[in-house]
Image (cartoon, rainbow, N blue to C red; front, side, top):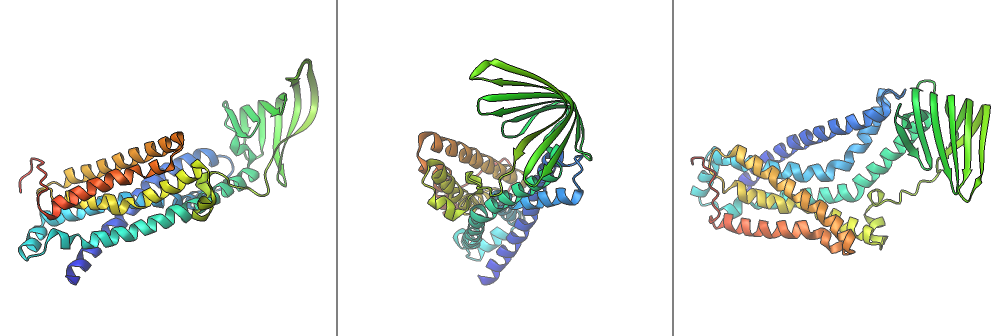
Length: 359
């Protein structure tokens, strides 16, 4: 039995590794295109861009691990069925229950790794990525401005710019609106220079005009014209608190007694258990499919993943809306029940799935 378990474990781990890299590459390409729109072409070097990209990757480990494991389980056991390995094992008196032992063990290991990724690696990755983007933003402040579009990357500040010259930090034919408490300052300028001094962003304006209105005293509307004017746009916080749930680690979430905090904690616990729970269901289906069902099996595996994540997303929103964090565990409860029924049918050889292919 040890030889069999080593064989199944080895083949499964190889498939998981390959599929993990494949799905991570897909996410990397999508993430790269999103970040590239923000940083490339703004005077940011390729190595800085690559640094941002790599620091954000660990945030996806907790999602990629379950997908990789489920698909790998289906592929492995359908392939073993196609090669008559399952038939040979059964003829030797080895039951489906005994064959499933490595799935439970490896599924548990991946669930533990997923738990660690979601509770520690993902929030640390999100923090590191935000810090890196803020660092780049301080270097190339025009990175936050898109030509001929309204941009509002700083709180209370809105830009509209016709032309941007990232290398020099210059903008031409622009409008900038600054909302401070009850005052709204709208500035129009032909040319301007964005610069950062320490943690403060300044805008130097040449040949412009400004409109200042106090909503409490609208009758005191002011119109100004100037040749040179400098305005403070934004001041970066020296100590970012990272108060959003996605930046919090396990211990920070435990101390968070809010509904959002509890929901986030249970949501991550739920997702971390998915490799084991959905993996068992995938195994039960794979050993019950007829020969030649590789395409059907993979499609079914992807369908399981899609259904799980739809339920996962909906349950989180419902949990927050109803103020009941326990509802975040709904995906694992439903899929756990399906896995139990499917596994029982598989080990009793009562689960038979007819896809129209021949044995």
